[in-house]
Image (cartoon, rainbow over all chains, first blue to last red; front, side):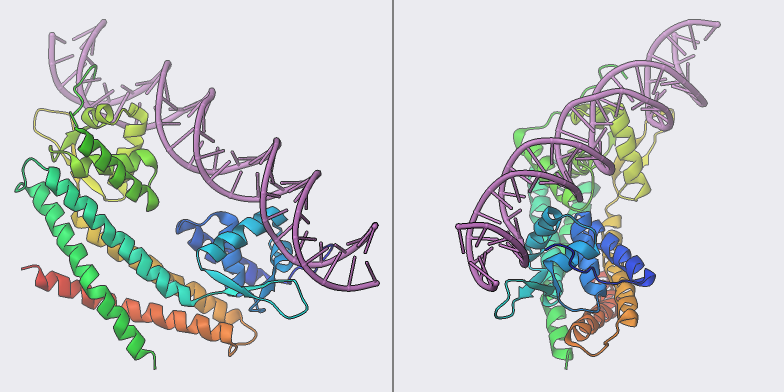
Length: 159
Length: 159
DNA sequence: AATTTGGTTCTGTAAATTATGAACTAAGGG
DNA sequence: CCCTTAGTTCATAATTTACAGAACCAAATT
């Protein structure tokens, strides 16, 4: 693993990796993990090996290992191998983006239960504050009803 | 400000404040800020003063001050005052939840631009990887098209 | 004019996060 | 059997975050 070659990136590509990286950081990823996402989005090689990633981003092997395993676990990347080689070739698993969207929405909808609990504990269930919470609950109900329909519409429209 | 009375909370209320707090932490808020959100959701007083919040959550004045100002800035809470009093009475600004939802979605859609940039830099615009990115772009376009309609539908259904 | 109220701002620091480097392992090749 | 490859794991170093505490300030009160 000595001296494998990093991918050559021009300045625009580097800047875009950072931009996409920051986006993913803001969505809860740690920096190195987010940069790997950025790299895989920008890279002209759709698949990259452990070393290529590590060298291109100047990440230590341990950071690379942890980051890749985390991305594998959360289903954001996947890999193939080629017969006779031990190397893994990592690539984005973009199908998972829509799954991720769905998960994000349903996590949001799960907040509904906390709100319901809050309502149950309220002394005054008719005050303005309570009514506001109830309206929020209704909004979340609305979303959980409409989201499947929306995604279905997308699937139908795809072709 | 010596010895103002904290709000009395039972165990269920305390637990729920933590639960709602953790939800907000997962959405990027820092712990103290998230607990304040929890408290305001659970509290039987729909409005609470600086001290009440600080004492009830055992937060220092600086933490309380920073947290409240952050929540004010991001539009998640608001306050009223009463004539003759300098105290501010803080409450949730729940109208902002749907605004927040909209913002979250549009931030997601803004990722579309990064993807477009990525496509522009690609050497091979027809490979599978590029096609996957294009499909994601189309999905985000679909969302940005459908979201306003969806929210409109909600507004109409409200009464 | 001194004190109290209702905060804000400024360090300092404990704790959590994030990444590094070195040691280790397991599989395959010579 | 030793070496290389392709990583993983562990201890620890370096940041970063989040909060407390003290000093401070402006408006109202005594």
